[in-house]
Amino acid sequence: MSTQLTPAIITAAIQGLEAQKQHLDAQIAELRAILSGPKPTAAAAPQTAKRRTMSAAGRKRIAEAQRKRWAAATGASESATPQPARRKRRLSAAGRAAIVAALKKRWAEKRAASEKPQPVVTRKTSPKRTIARKAA
Image 1 (cartoon, rainbow, N blue to C red):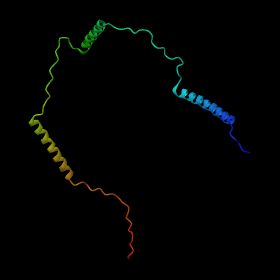
Image 2: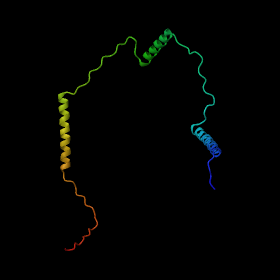
Image 3: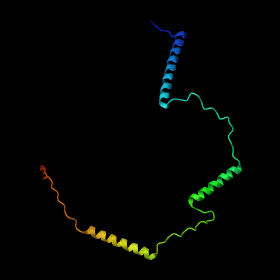
Image 4: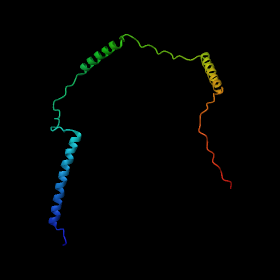
């Protein structure tokens, strides 16, 4: 018995596959919803009300008040001038020489300590086996 693919059979096969595809798409959508959580049903309405604006004078008053609060919080007075930067401290030549001498002394002591004979530590070991060689 030979089966021939007629247009009616092909159309029925396409419809069946599309139904399966829709079923799979629905299942995938359910799983994605579980994974990402519930989606909001209503989209957020776009903002239609006009935003309020502040005048330049109002912004200036707010900025000046904030500067005044900041000055009070940091303890700075309005008439105070900034302090000049302090000079960095430098190491004198005598101080550097003292440090170098102390380091040389410390390293000499360390070398002298390492040159002392170290105590010999003996360990108990198992007797070694000797392998007899055959004379060739």
